[in-house]
Length: 182
Length: 416
Image 1 (spheres, chains in turn purple, blue):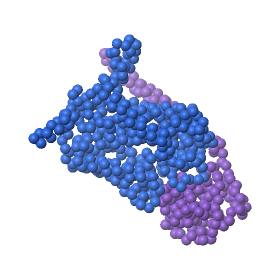
Image 2 (cartoon, one colour; image 1 turned 45 degrees about the vertical axis):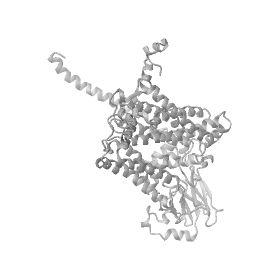
Image 3 (cartoon, rainbow over the protein chains, first blue to last red; image 1 turned 90 degrees about the vertical axis):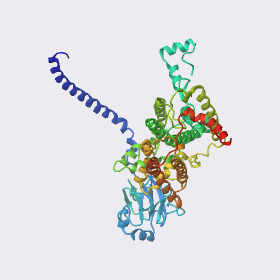
Image 4 (cartoon, each protein chain N blue to C red; image 1 turned 90 degrees about the horizontal axis):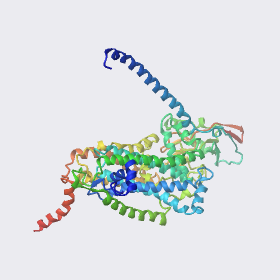
C-alpha cells in the first residue's frame, strides 16, 4: 500500500477482482435461477392431469330445445339442441357490433348443435341457462349470476363484464348422434 | 416483564448471556415510555397480535385433523365438527377468529388514518402494516377454500381467475396456480400448504412492524411528538393493564360469535360440498373482503376491474405523500375530519354493495362509491391539506392532558 509499485499493481488486482466478482455473481445467479425452476414448475399440471382425456357423448336422447351438460377435462361442456328460432336469432346479429366478433357459422359444425365450454370468460363461473327454468339473460342464451354477463343463443358475450365468447372446444361428429370432445 | 435488575439469580444468569429480559422490558415493559394520552383505539395493535396467536394455535390444532384432498376435505371438516373432542369449538374459534382479526385490524387502520399515524416519520411502519393486511387477505382467502364447500370452490375460482385478466401470460399463470385446467385437489393441497405458511410470514412482518414502531414510538391522539419525560408513562403497568382490560371486552365479543352465532358471518352454501358443475346463484366473499369485491365489480371491464381492486389498496401505500397537511391529526382539521367520516361511510356502502347481486341500482351505487373512494385519496387528501386552515394543536401532550382539567377551571372562570 505504501510503496508506489504496489499501488500500480493494485490497479491490475482490482480489475482481476472485478472479473472474479462478476463471474462468481453470474455463476451463482444463473445457478440459483436454474435451481429454482423445478420449484416453480412443480405447480404446473402434473402428467396425469395433462393426459388429455376425451369425452364421447351420445346426443340421441336430447330433444330439440333441450340442453345437457357433460364433463370434459373436469370442465362443464354445454351441448344445446337449438331451435330454428334460436339459430335465426343468433344469425340475425350484425357480427361487427359484437364485443368478440364471431359469426354463428364459425362456432358450430352442425347448425342445430351448439357445443361450448360452459365457463364464463369473466371469472370462471358456470353460467345459468341450461335448464328451461334457469334465467337465460336478455338474449335467450345464458346468464352468469356471478357478475351479470349475458350470452346469446350462440354463446357470444352480449352484455356484462366478460371479455370473450364462451369457447368452443375441439370436437368431431362420430355419427349424426354422437360426438367426441377433445 | 420481570425487571432486568431484579435480584433473581436465574434472571441475572440468563440476562448476562442473553439480555432477553431487558429487551422485553424495552419492548413491552416499564422501560418503554409511551405517550400518556393514548385512548382505547390504541388497544387494537396488541389485540391484533393476540388474535394472530389465537389463529396460529387453533390452526395448528385443526391441521392435526384436516385432510387437504378434494375427496376428503369436506368430510374431514365435518369429522372435526362432530367427532373430534372440542373440534367444533376449535373450528369456530378459528373461523370467527379470522373475522375478529380483520375487525381489529380495520379499526387499527382507520385509527391510523384518522390520527395521521402514516405521516413522517412512520411511513415505513404504515407500509409494513399494509403488507400485513395483504398477507392476511391471502391467508384468509386460502383458509376459506379449505372446507371445500360450494363457496370455497367458487370463491377460489373467481379469485384465481382474476389473474387471467393479465394480458398474454394470464392464462398460463392461472393454470400454474391451479395445477390443472380447473380448481381441483392439486389447488386445494397447495392452498393448504400456503395457508399454513403465511401466518408465520405475518409474524415476521409483525416483528418488523413493532421494530419500526419502537424507533419513533406510538403516535398519539394529539399527533404532537413526545417532547420529554413529562409526556410519557411507562408501558408497564399502565398500558399492559389497559390492553388487558380491552382484551377482556374483546373476548366477550369474540365469545358471543363463537358460542351464540358461530355461522352468522359465514355462508350456508359452504355446507354444500364443492360441485365443479354448478355455480351457486350468488357468490359473495366473506364480509371483510366485500368492499374490494364491490370495487372489482364496479368496473365493467375484466382487466379494469382487477386493476381498480389492486389500486384500492395500492393507493393506501401513497397516502403518506398524498396527505399534504402539516397537522397529523384529523381532530384539528375541520374540513378533512368530515371527509374522513364520509370515506368511512363510503367503505361501508361499498361493503353493502359487494354483499348484493350486481343488478339494478346496486351497479350505479357501486360505481359512485368506487369513484368517491379514489377521489378521497387522490383529490380530497392533497387539496384539503393545501387549502384548509387547521386549528392549533396543543403545545404538548402533557398540556393537552392537563387542559382537560384546566378546561373545567377556565369554564368556572367564565361562569364567574
